[in-house]
Image (cartoon, rainbow, N blue to C red; front, side, top):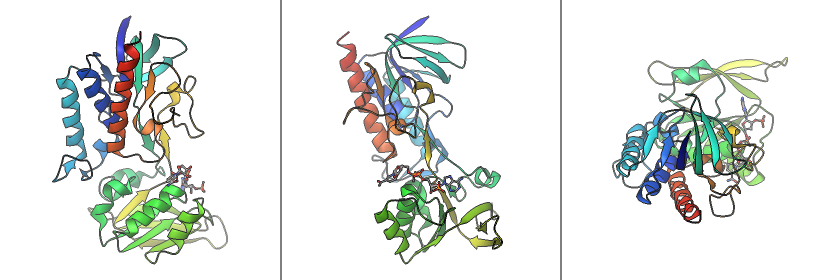
Length: 310
Ligand code: NDP
């Protein structure tokens, strides 16, 4: 069975940045890219808020740049998906979907999080053409336009508020008759002149020719007052939560109730010696590429320090 000194699982900004640092520290990192090589950013269009690209960059191209930078320092990139782990004692065991099994001295978990979608076929059809799960990433393209945000939690309110600073009008589509968000976020949204909150509404579908042009809504579904109608929108933002990709580590590392890996203080340490978590899988709050990249660097520095004690 192959033994790896520094195993990195996941290939978003956190995983690739960890690989750059681990490669430069001579840790001979091996990185498994997982289900979506390059991570969530390969699904967005233009990235304008990552330092170093003054003209902006396509998400896919940026991830390819970071990947090549990691390869330059000798990272061994592989394409299998981790399906099971045993972190009960070092060296740790990891199994992959190509029937391989490895042991590792250190593991950097950088498996990211996946935005939840409603499950409508139209969401897939208009992905990148009006549908997004990240207002901070894509909101800029909707300046002076009309958009809708789905969800009633802090993320939805925060994104609606952010978009209201750019767009002409924002609908907040909430399935319950109340918001789940914190009081202060509720007030910001309810008092904002550009935001209209549609309580007890669900989205049944989306429509548009080339680009998204509107949504089919239903109000008070299943009641005598049920009403179906359409709204005209240019952008449709999902903010109904994220699912951190931590399932295969959960028996061993501590997570919060949603599944985000809990790390110790300002460090990426998980509590399992030599196992570190970086990027969105351990970040319910920021979920930004630059933050993930920074935490990947921290994880590799920690891995180097840990290995030097063995
Ligand atoms: P939450 O789980 O808190 O909220 C999800 C929202 O989406 C709820 O309103 C929920 O409705 C709604 N929803 C879920 N599924 C569907 C569906 N299928 N159709 C329609 N609506 C749906 O997730 P958040 O991402 O908002 O927040 C996650 C955590 O992060 C929370 O603890 C939050 O407080 C925290 N957070 C904190 C921030 C801050 O402090 N600045 C910023 C952002 C997040 P329902 O209420 O009916 O279940």
